[in-house]
Length: 446
Image 1 (tube, rainbow, N blue to C red):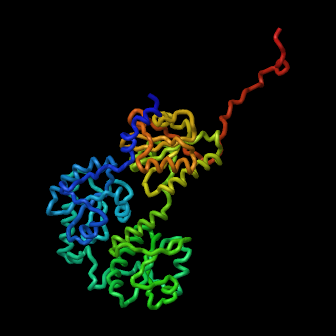
Image 2: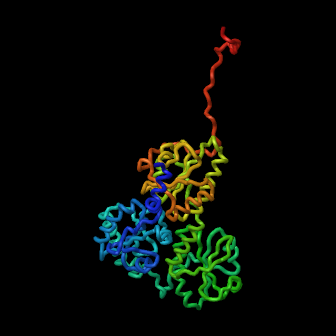
Image 3: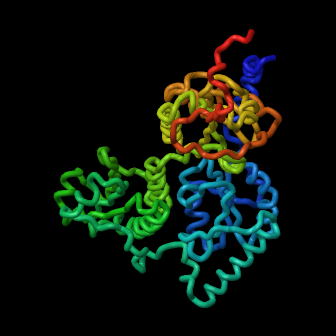
C-alpha cells in the first residue's frame, strides 16, 4: 500500500494522536501537587514552605523519564518540602512567567518566592531529595539569622508599605507622550488616585510585578503609574472614570483596558503574554550537522523541516524568497514553541528518504514529532497560504501521518552553511593542449 493510501487508513487513529496533547503526567493520587495559574499564587507564592516545582510538557520524553523519580522524591519529602508540577504546555503563561524555555525545568522557591532558583542537579530521586534538604537547611539558617524576613517572605506586607516601587515608572501629562506614544515597548499603565483604597491594595502587587516583568522581558514590557487626580489631561484623554484603571499601550494600536486579576501573578502572566505576542520568531536554522537537527527536534513538540531546491536551481534570490515564507510562518506560529529547520535538496538525502521526500518535488516540508518519530508532509503549495493551512490542520490534530523511515533519524552529514550567494558550477580541469598538433585537428584519418 502506498503512503497516500496508508495515510487514509491511519486517519482517526494515528493522525489524531500525533499532535494533540498527552494526558497529564501526574494525578490526585500522587504526592506531587498539580499547580495551575488558578492556585499557584495561593499554594506557592503565599506559602511559608519550601517548594520544588517542575515545569513540564506531557509530550516531552525527558519529562516522562523524570516522572517516576519526581513522584518518589515527593513521597520522601512529604510533610517536609512541597513538591509540585506545572503542565507548562497547557499553562504557557505560567511557564513564561518564570522564563521556562525548555522541558523539564525545575525551580526552587525558597525564602524569597519572587526569586526562584534554577535546579541544576541530577534527575534521580536521590539527587532531588539531597538538593531539597540542602535548600531547606539554607532557608532555616536564614530564618535563624533574621535575614529572610520571617515567615512572610513570600508575601509583601501592606502595613510596611509593600514592595519597592523602583521599577514602576511614574508618568505625567508632560512625560507621557514622549515615553509611551510610538514606543517600541509595550506599556501597562495604572491610572490611580492617592485616596483610593483599591489602588492602595494594588500598589504592592503592581510594584512586585514591575520588577519581575522588567527582568523577564529585558525591559520590553513596562509597568507605569499615573496619578489621575493631578494629571487630569491624561485622565480626560483616556476617559478615566474609576480607580484603579489599567490600560495597555502598544505601538500602532489603540489602547485597551486590562480586565484581568489584580495579583502580581495575574499581572505578570498578562505582561508575558504581551511580550510573547511581540517577541521575535524562533530561529530558522540550516541543518549543517546532526547536533542542529537533534537539539532542535528534541527540545520542541514539533520541528518543521523544509527541503529547498538546490542553489543552482533558484539562485540566492529564489532561496531567500522561500526562507522568507518560512520566517513569516515561524512568526505566525511562534507561540506553539516549534523548531524550524531547512536544508538543501541532496545535502541530507537520507533524511529526505526517511521523510518520504527523496529526490523530487522541491521545495518540500515535513512536520516531525521526534518523540513519536512520526511526520506529516505538506501536500499543498509551498506558500504562505498553503503552509498556513497545513500547520493549522496539524494544530487541531488533523492530517495524515506516517512513521519516520527506520524509526529514527538517519545519519546527518556535516555540511558547510550556505554563504548567502548564488551557486557556481563546478570548475572543470584545464586541458593541456601544448603537445597537440593543431594543424592535424579536424583532419579525417585515411
